[in-house]
Image (cartoon, rainbow, N blue to C red; front, side, top):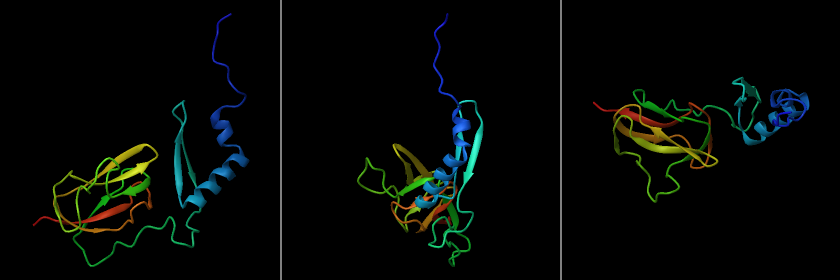
Length: 152
């Protein structure tokens, strides 16, 4: 007889797809102002759970209005969903400030998710014109966080 890992009845995938569990997850997402999450199981199956479907009335989950008169401005986007951090927790000063010149691929801010801290990079060289996210606010994957006026 070989020893093996003892499994609980029902895989994690079965537990997630349980209607009661799904209802709880959607409730947590809505309370946190999160539109959706993606879960990858040990077997490599990717699941996306979507909450709200645009029903938020307090502005949570809506894309910020970045249509300011900066027609040429390029967005710097969040690399993951999490909380916007203008300063890395281990540092005292911000990587870049509004009005400063930035280089392509330069770190200009961060997104934190638990212990994970991911940098936000400037996609193009230019001038950091605006920050459209409040420090500590929840941002989604791909959300515009900064606007950069391209270098001439």
